[in-house]
Image (tube, rainbow, N blue to C red; front, side):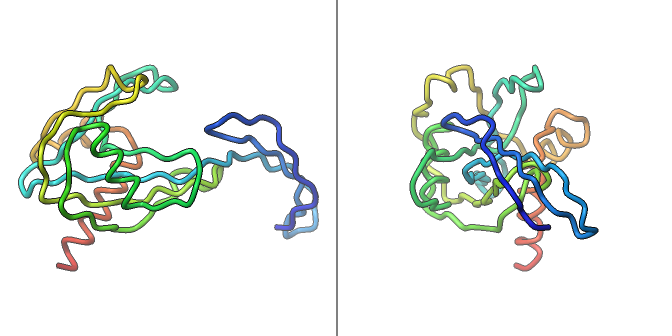
Length: 176
């Protein structure tokens, strides 16, 4: 696909909505709209027996969602380990002695430029969360692997990044 023209339709500090005029492989001109978003880290806090999840209200879904902690930074060079360490501390209060990048996922490759970097956090030490004002209603709890998988199966976990991160963890464990 060849980009012929591009224009910014909307921007704020989190996203930019772009509309491009493109020439498809068949030679036809078309419009393609997409979001530019900064990359994020998603953290899998694992104590060897349980996962630590956060629950927060997700406005577009109009519901509270359980998910692995995570987030992004507004600007600068993206360092998945640094972002994972920050998000883990902010959202759960946990500190990890070991952080391992498991891979990355594209949560919505047809609509956004964003990648999620999956990081396993182990050797955890508890501490107080350092939540941002928008995260004050956040809850967090520990879940066994069986509980976690049941939450995916029964729809209590619907966050695609959490499910994808778990898939990368399973592959990592299988490689041993």
